[in-house]
Every structure is written in C-alpha cells, then in structure tokens.
Length: 441
Ligand SMILES: Cc1ncc(COP(=O)(O)O)c(C=O)c1O
Image (cartoon, rainbow, N blue to C red; front, side):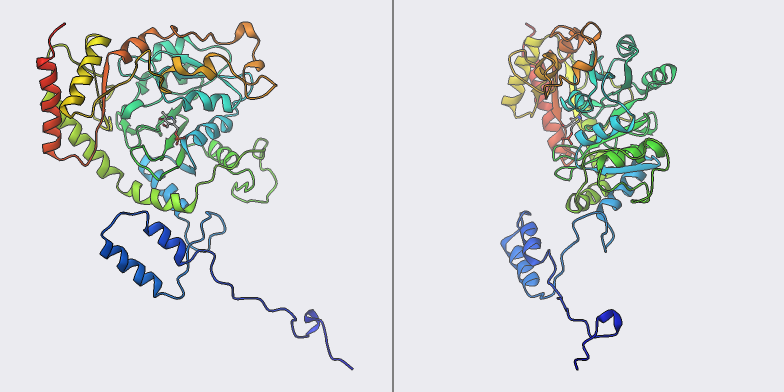
C-alpha cells in the first residue's frame, strides 16, 4: 500500500521550483553603463568587475511591492521637502501631472480652465484631455499670465486658473492668489519650466492648490521623462494618486472600500519607473546647486550687458525667486529683434527668438490648431460639445495681441548653470557688441 499523502495531510510536497535567476542582471546594468560616456579604460574596468560578479542581482523596477526601498518614493520625499508641501506624487510627465491635477479637482466636461497664451501646448492639451475647455489669456511683460486679464476671462464655467512660470520666472502669484481666493477658483501652477524657483519666499508649486512639475530631459531637473504633483491638500493628493494609477488604488489601503465618495474612480497609468526615480533622486539632490549656478551665470551676464539704450529686460515679478535658467529681454520691435538675434548667433551667443509669424512653434497659442479649430478626438465632439456653441470661448489668432507683440520683439537665451565666469563674460560681450554696433534703424 502506497503511503502517498497530500502535503496538507503531512505528505512530502510533490513540487519544488527554482531558485530562478533574477529578472534584471548584469546585461541590463551594462546597458545602462553603456549609456554613460567615459574613458574606454573606466568602461572596461566596470565591465570586468560586473562580469566577474556571478550573483549580481538587479533592481525591482516597480515602485510598489518593492522588496528594496523604492527610488520613486525617495524622489517624492525629496521633492516634497524641496518644494515644501505636505504631499508629493511622482508621475511620468508634467502632462500627466496636469491631467491628474485637473481630474483630482473634479474638472471635466462643461468646465473651463484659464491658461496663458504663451506656454507649451501641453498646458492647453491637458485641459482638453480632462474633457474641459481652455480659455486662452494674454501674458503681461513678465511673459506670464496677466492677472487682470485672467480675472476678466472668468465665467461661471471656470474651474481652475493655470499660471505657467515660463522660462524659469515666477508669475505674479500675489495677484493670482488673491484672485483665486476672491473667486473661489483653485490655481494649478505649471512649474514645468521653473523647478526650484520661488515667489516672495514660497517655492513655486507650493502656492496654488496644486503644483505640476516636469522632469523631461530639457527641464532644470531631469530624469529623461518624469513629473511630480505637489499639494498640501490630502484629498487632492489621494485623488491625483488614484487617477495616476487606476489599478493600484492606494489610499492608503489598496483593497479597502471607498472611505468617502469620490475616492474611487477609473483613472489611467501615469506611474514613474524606478529607473527614472533613481535619476530624479540624484537631480533633486543637486537642485539647489543647479539653481545657484543658473542665478550666478544669469546675474553675471546681465551685469555685463547692463542696460544699453533700446534694451528692456523682461519684467521680473520677484528677481530673487527667478530660477535664472533663462535670460530674456525685449528690443524696440520685431525687425530689430530678428536682426539682433542673427547678429548674436554669428558672434557665438546662443540667443534665439520666441515668435515669428512664419515659423510654427507649439509655445504660441496661434499655432495650437487643435484648440483654435476646436478639434475633437472622437465622434462625441468632446470637449467642445459639452458647452453650447454660443457659450464656448472664442478663439482667434489676434485675440491676445499683447502676447504676440511682446514675443515678437523678445530675445531669449537658455542659461547653463555650468558656464564659467569667462563663458558668461564672453556672452555678455557678444550681446553688448551687437547692441552697440547694430545701428539704430
Ligand atoms: C510649460 C510646460 N508645461 C508642461 C509641459 C509638459 O511636460 P512633459 O514633457 O513632462 O509632459 C512642458 C514641457 O515642455 C512645459 O514646458
């Protein structure tokens, strides 16, 4: 008679698996090493050491259920402290951060959000992605949302005002915050281009109801792709996190019933990966150093250029809070700006223009065909169809004349925080030379 018994009755288990090798091993690590440029000797040495390590065990590239401390969570905590809010959520882009913010605020079909006429197109697209409609408003001499014009654009449908701290400089947050409080309309700060900046002592992204950051490769702090949502409001944080990962539903208990109406709904997947999280950690740790470098280089170039006749520096709402990542000034008119930019480039100055009526650019509202022509994504006609035609915002190429006038005569330059004093002096000399010799016509 066989004494075979089930394992649950004391028998010998029939199945034995593994151990299986780790999912991420030396190959994946060496792919990453190959992305960094270094001396052939250093690379060969790293490859030799990694190759000689038989049990090398790669990371768990997923923020949840991670047996090791999550780098995404570490990035969130560092960013939360850097910005000074109670909560911070990592996402995979600022586009995602903005949609999550609008959804967290309960914005949807039939609603309007005020956005500036000069910003990256994502500012308008994300409003539409949340099924709402963007209302496009002129910028002022700071190249940021004009608070008075924003107030004039408010309707009964306005559910958020979304100032963008363009080109590293804070919008006029005192006036916008006052407007927000008077009207009971939340501010969604788009800090994609101004991470690390502040306004009168408060970090950008901590002033409005929600702050949205980009860590795409071209931003001040970058992780290739990535973004963050910052807020002091626990409920907004919970809802943003639910939208950002519809499958996870951490609130904080993943499988718990809804604690309060509005906590559970169908969202998307905007999760940041652990690889981006690790890079973001390194970048946030050096954010102060990068901002200090931007400010130093910016101030040195400005001092070297001075205030020659015909040049007007961009209005700064708070010079001390500007990130310094961009240098912007206006010349008398578009033609002069165009000629000065050509001449500066020939001198070796990395300057550029912002608006040319003949050059398409997603940063200027006139080129946002998808919005200007009210293009829906599907046959339902959303987001436009949710608002009666007579009540929809008017879009026309000439509707924000101040924006176009300012942009057409603006000269702009990205400032690199690693520039030496010598680099800065030579850039200042190039700008000054052009403005001195270009002629007054
Ligand atoms: C002002 C502004 N908002 C939003 C975005 C979108 O950021 P991301 O590329 O991370 O989606 C950008 C990116 O260029 C931006 O400049």
